[in-house]
Structures are given as structure tokens and as C-alpha cells.
Image (cartoon, rainbow over all chains, first blue to last red; front, side):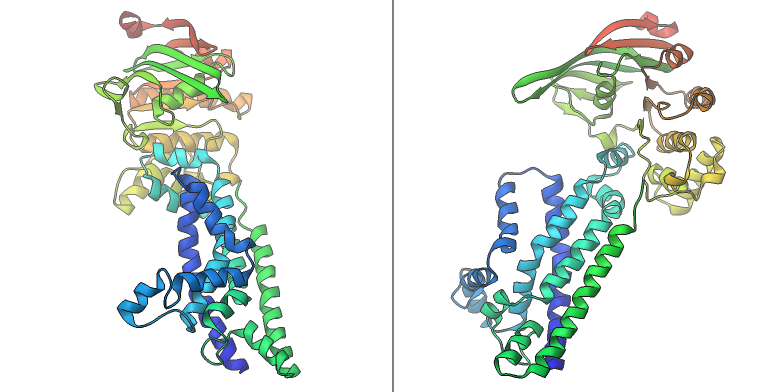
Length: 220
Length: 228
């Protein structure tokens, strides 16, 4: 149980962090650099999972992605497949709950880059996207990496929303936090202890790395 | 030759905070834009560069129109070919002097780009800074690098926003010489913003003094005079 839960957790978290990294940066760029109608609404919507109880987030995910869900029904009609009770469902849950952390950290970091650097790049003939990748992104990398590590840790600990949409199927959707719950519920203290220690070690490492990174990369 | 005739209002919470209304011509020498802080000097530079957009008016450089409110023309910053030297230099802090200069060189080939950067470093006698980050340079060195970067992009006009305000007095005289030399080599208009009287009288082919967003006085020498 320990081995399969750890493997599954790593798979889910790896996929989730990858998606959060790309999507989070795109949203952070949009929110930091662009003005458009509905920006506040988008910001609020993306931040919601940070304050909502995870089971509520999970409930909404079922409404959206379930077999008869708003989006899920189309997916089911087309493919005969649905996110419910799959490890991909666990990935979606992890993405939704950790995305706001990535967006917030990287947006703040992007906004704190002295706008003169960007303007200087424009006067040198560089377009907005080119400037973003060559100037803004490297200068904001501290916050972006911190956001990634926080998202990684949040995704690793995800329980409520995952349980709602992916369930708790050993070897299939049972990630580490769910395995701990099951071990405790069935009185298997040793199992619970080992799992808890592994998660604690990973979390400590994440905090240590975040702190270390936030002290380096300081430019004038 | 640069011709500018623009108006711009800055409104905050429904109240007019500052209004700019300037109209002048700058020829192919160094034109000093003088005046106390808050007079609108930096705003004028930013309008020329395209960082800010005027409410109305015209900005032309030679035969090219940068901005014309009547014809709804507004050339984006990237295409104006303006070399801008910022007050805080705005050298990219994660790039070395060589990389900073190469960044602006409009050459697709990487080796040629590096050669161009090297050429500029030599021209400003700062070859020894090639691999240094801005944080490892003195104010004067950063200033030279910023000027070299602006010129490496083959601009058609150079705008300098109080470029010597963060440099000590001794270095200042040397850098003034270099700016004059750079201008005479490049043969393009330089617009030099300063509130320092010594710098203004040292450099000016022409001098425009701003006060409260308006032109207070205008002294144009040589060709400028006949065009004024």
C-alpha cells in the first residue's frame, strides 16, 4: 500500500505541478500585464479554491466533470470515459487547489519587476512576449520557483477534493494522504506512521528549498 | 530633426493633476531640455519615445510621423528606433554589460551580435566590463554601458533622462565629453534632460526650458534658429 500510494502520489503531483507551472504563469502574465473585461472575476474565480473547503471544490468538480456534468457529459458522450474515479481526476483536483498559490506568487513577483526594464527592452525593439521571456521572467524567477514549490506541496497534500472526484481506490486513485486516512481508520498505526513521516519529510524539504531560493537570486 | 507639438493631461480621481503643452523643434545636435523637477521634462521624453501617448498633437522625426492624433497614427515604441538612456540606467540586472549591449543590437546572427557589442564596448573604452553584471559596476561605468546599449540598437534619435544625476562630479565632466563625442559620431539628434545648470550650459546647441508643463524659454542656435 505504501509503495503504490507513493508512486501514485508522485505521478499525480508531477503532472499537476507541470500543468500548474504552465497555466499558472500564463494566468499570472494575463493578470499582471493585461487589462480586460472580467479580469476581477477571473481573478476571484481562480482564487476561490484557496478559501473554499476542498470538499466543496471537489463537489463543483463533480458537477463540472462528472459523467453527467456540464463539461463531463460531452467528454463522456465522445469518449465513454470520465474523470470520476481516475488518477487523472486526482490530477485535476490537485491542479485546481494549487493553481491559486502559483498564480499569486508569480503574479506578485512579475509585478515587482521595475517596469523601466520592460520599457527599456521595448525601446530596443523587443516585442512584449520576447521581453517577458528574456527580461521579466528571469527577474521574477524567485517568486515563480517559490510558487512552484508551494503548489507542489499543496498538490501533494491534497485530500478533500481528490476524495470527492477520484475516490479512494487503492492502487488506482489512493494517494498518500488518502492512504494515511485509511491506515488510521483500519487501525494500521505502523503504516500510517511511515506514510506520515514520508509526507513530513517532503514538506520540510519544500519549506527549506523555498526559503533558500527566496534568499538567493537577488539582483540590484 | 524632431518636431513635437503635443498636449497631454494627467487626471487623478477626476481632478487634473498636471497638464503638458509643448511645441518645439530639435535639430541634429544636442538639445537640452531644462527645468525644475515636475516641469514635464521626463514626460516629454516618454511621449517622444512612445512610452506615453499624447492626448492630441503631432510628433515627427525627419520624414516619419511617430504620432498624429488627426490621422490616428501612433507608431509603437518598438518601431520608433529611439535610444533611451534612463535616469536609473535600467540596465538588465541579470545580464552582463556585453549581453546588455547585444540585447539591443538588431542583428539576427549571434556571432555578429557579439561582435557588435564588442565594438561598442571598445568605442566607449569599457571592454573590461564585458562580463560584469551591472551590480558590479560603478555609476559611471553603468552610464557608459547604458549609452553604448542605446546606440547599439542603431537609433535615429537618442533621449537621455538626467543621465548623470547618479554620478559624482569628477566623472560627470568626463561623461559629458563622451556624450558629446557620441553625438558627433552618430550625427543624430540627442535630447538631454537635466535640471543641472552647469550641464545645460555646457552641452546645449539649443536649450528649451520647461516650467509647469509649458515652454518657458527657448534658445536655439545655428540651424535651429532659422527653423524656429
